Image 1 (tube, rainbow, N blue to C red):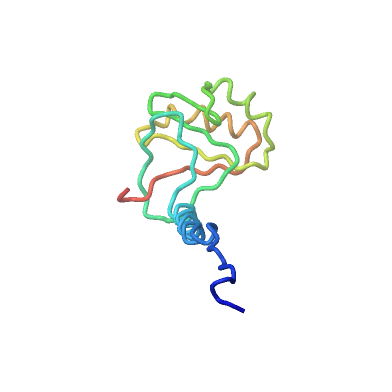
Image 2 (image 1 turned 135 degrees about the vertical axis):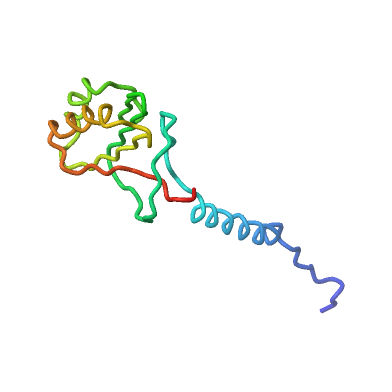
Length: 132
């Protein structure tokens, strides 16, 4: 058989895409590991600093500003309406409370009272890690 008459195998254009797919896959993994997937808070709150590294986990997100502004899962509300809105959730749910570091006890007390009256047993106060 004459080597000049044998058809040559053409390089597939897909072979050039394999290194690109590998790079994109590695970038995807990098951003999944390095990035934070958190919903931004509705209120402008400065959280208190702590030295613990335990992550906050919860089903219900409460945000409280120093002047008494209150949000339940990104929806503005008041402490008077909070008990009625919490009735839609299971009392076994954990509440994450994002309270501004300058929040006074007078502002915090009605919120905690509404949570207690709604029958919730788990409330976690969220803070920032010191130095962030």
